[in-house]
Length: 224
View 1 (tube, rainbow, N blue to C red):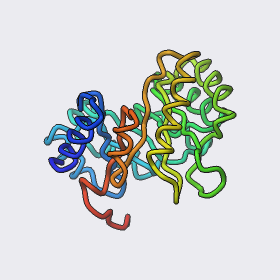
View 2: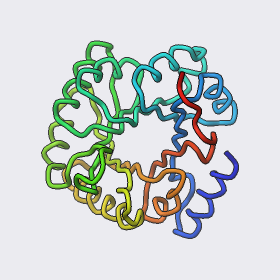
View 3: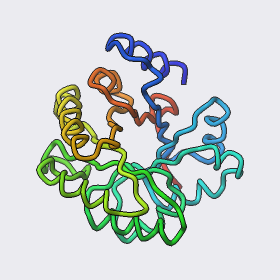
View 4: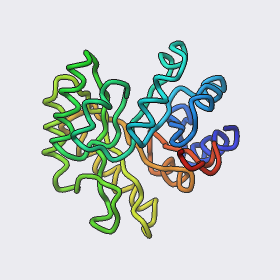
């Protein structure tokens, strides 16, 4: 934790930013609830999960006092038939990339009497990988559809740097899209970008949220 916090502080100083502007989301995929409790004891308040089945079971396993003090971000690709179930435990869904997914989340949140914060995942690499995301040209229509959902709160954008691309270029492009989005949705101020290998580039570009796993928890064990 200290090493990553120092990296964020150094990157923030280099960019003339306050490190308090950056929210660290610790990715706990494949790590047990006990590790989440240890992270909570170290001051972590935002965790990220990729897989619905694992995430749902893990959140339920946490003691209520810990669970209620954490914000759980679902950051993996999400199918519409799983969205209602994810809405039962996630506080934030960062990977909304289709209207169908947004509406399914909205229905699930209504069913569970919850309100979810969401970011739209943007595909900045075209069809070169399977990481998901809406194409930039389709972003305005999706943002409008999310904003129309009564149980969703559009908070901003998310991306994963395309394979083989310069992370800084991708993140700067995301910042441009964020500025355009805020013209119509001024509350959508979050920019989720950057992971263990490229968090410095994300901070330099202006990211507000980082998703870091292996640099804090080490190599992920195989899920059994």
